[in-house]
Length: 393
Ligand SMILES: Cc1ncc(COP(=O)(O)O)c(C=O)c1O
Image (cartoon, protein in one colour):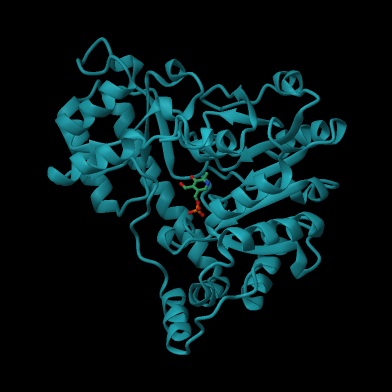
């Protein structure tokens, strides 16, 4: 038979799924996948029930139902301080992933280059590959994950179209400072580039960090697509609802493309999630506080065991380095062996470091842990890790 399209070459299921299956058979705890298993807020669930009961079951406008777009516009203006003017600056998508795909389709021709910072979120890079884009990676160095802007400028060529920024970041928890974003914006303007920002962890910040949206800086919105969604903030990854904020002429085309790909986000669920905007301020502060406590529990445990831990500034992941364990313990020769060792000896799932780097060797001594778990589950996971791997203390 004829071969499949070239864009499918190299696409394969990551080890996350295999690890998930192994854990299921042994009553393990999965700190690998970025899934928050806390409950979705009641007002959102009730809003969806009411919409289903009222037969709000038909296609919506491809950009989303009006009350939801109004909520997103208001949030983009007040929380993100983005100078969006009208509903035409806002569209609802199937997850923030849907927004990201529509953005790439709209901005990139095959062969255009995009700059990505690593460690990166795998979907960004894999979707760029599927699009046939050239990918230039700039490596950030822990523990603060500083950006070498000279290297960024050196990576820009005639073919560069866009730069992707993920703040707060997955997997390293980097939160871009206002100063860094201003420096980046200078480069965007100088070289006439677009920015695509993924801000899905925007409410999860630690140690007094502030979330700054690039598009809020003067002159940035006209060249920035800001992407976010409801999956993480409201514990509803399976509902598949996200959004983009950006210039009208770009969103126009993104909407038409999203219409071709999936027509619209599920209508009754859009009605439900519109209730997200009536959540009180305390919802967000309590969530951030709860994640801060979970961050402490996990990071301290990993440090006690001997991991080198760059504490995340935001999001709910830790990309920890097990190099210091290699002398003391067996089963840690590289990230894949370490991932297996944690499953077999402690029943704990993680993600191998290579998933976040272009060159697997750059992630060879790292594992990503996710702390979006109920506290008792996270504490049990930490107990198992300590009892399996001891402590250096
Ligand atoms: C950085 C980042 N962006 C996007 C997503 C996916 O978001 P959504 O569920 O809105 O498609 C994830 C999920 O892990 C993520 O880590």
